[in-house]
Image (cartoon, rainbow, N blue to C red; front, side, top):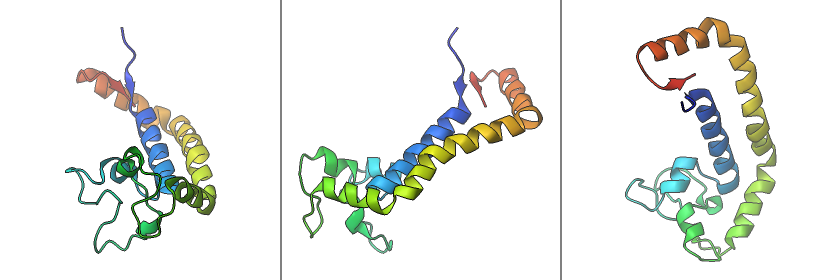
Length: 133
């Protein structure tokens, strides 16, 4: 019997990935992965008209996978330099996201286990879904 999919762990992983993406690449995980494709209106450089983004610090997966050493912005800074600038500017939110989100999730799970999680898992089992909270 395979183990059930843990929805809480999936949510924590998604939140941590989004935190890392926002603080290192300068853009959310969905936009990082899909910018420059038909799934997203952002260009490959992450620029979105009328969004107010400071797109000079945004790097997308399409730029990284493109093999170019420089970002697609006018400044021509290397992608690695843009990543390092973002990490230097956002190191505290990055650490809070990577360390704090799992800790908060673990504490919250322990606090709400009996009143919410156990009944939710029983309900999910009764309807036949192979997941748990």
